[in-house]
Image (cartoon, rainbow, N blue to C red):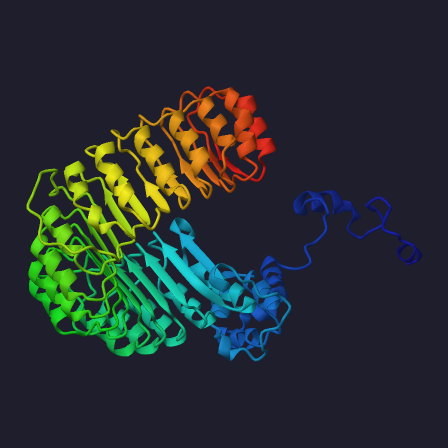
Length: 586
């Protein structure tokens, strides 16, 4: 007994003095060497580990929802959303209006584009999880104002439900090439985001009239709508938009199978693009219904239903139309253009592009109206031949004339415009290889008001004479001059510009025959505010021009010396260092 009491546990294993001492070796060999016994079984240990888990994990979503909506701050909500995907999902379903605590000031409100938070998710970054994170993270920063989702097939109703619940202040929504988004997502947005002002849908085949109609019925502030290549959207949704959105100002429809009807009395900006199946009758009805009384700007591109008859009806039905762009409408001829300009009495700006049935007769007929701006681009029906001209009155209202890339346009055509130019201020004649000095100089002499902007780019047959006369006649008013690609323009023109053009602030002589001497003359000129200078592609400009460029750089904010290969890289670095306020392209 004393031995047992005094045992410390550090002695050797006792093999003697026992009733079983004789059989100790046999017992040891049978039971094995002595070892420490396992105190708790594996199953019981696993049970204890389960018991050690935080108790909040076993709570149902409904209880978590009640806890999360009572979090005191946006930082707390954002931190909680980072715990797990489950917590993020529950938090994203909490509406801003259901928060027990008002949004705190712990995070300063961030203003981005247009004065509110903007988020753009593209490609693989556009997922439901990311949308949920955006909804939770922006709720404490004043709310999301603009959301754009592009090129994703991983976004579903789940993500947009989170946006709807967490971002009731959403004003702009753009969905481009998102085939997985359907009507359910737009319906969720319409239920919560009643402040929506702009909706842009492009290549969303699963969105139909149902989704757009929901937006129309629940978002009365909608002012701008763009729909492109959404094959399931038709007249039903457009009529709902027109009926329910009194603030609608701009609508753009591209490549749809149907056409807007006679609705839209508040629309002032309308673009119809690629409506190849809309017939002449549809466009005629649109104009004849006189439902677009507030329309001031109209763009029609690649619409086969636009003919002379329907164009005239549009002119009569849109009494306040001021700006009109007609492009790639192959059935519009001179007759339709003249009838339209006569019917649209308020028209001020007319642009005609790639309408090859339009000839000089149609253009001159259009100028009989009170147009202030006329632009003719790539109309191959214009030929440089003498034609009988109608009785024309002097057009004293024309301020801007643009004729660009009309291959058949020449001096004969140009001569007929002389009587329309007394008040002309902006003149663009670009890409016209058929005009020469003898055709252009009379136009310059007849512009009595003084030209402010002149663009003669890529007119290969113009020489120094035009520039000399331009600088002499209009040097006191000229501010912008573009001579890019006029290969016969030399230093003589720059010397005249330097001597006469006091107010010039933008000069482009790219790909002209300019040398160091020309820049020397320009640096010593009278112009006091030259801000933009381009000498790109002037292969004769060398290192000798660097001092002149530095002197001009005292006022320059933009300088283009690309493809000036005779200027060494070290001197380019010197220019960059000295003209630190100037944006230099090299």
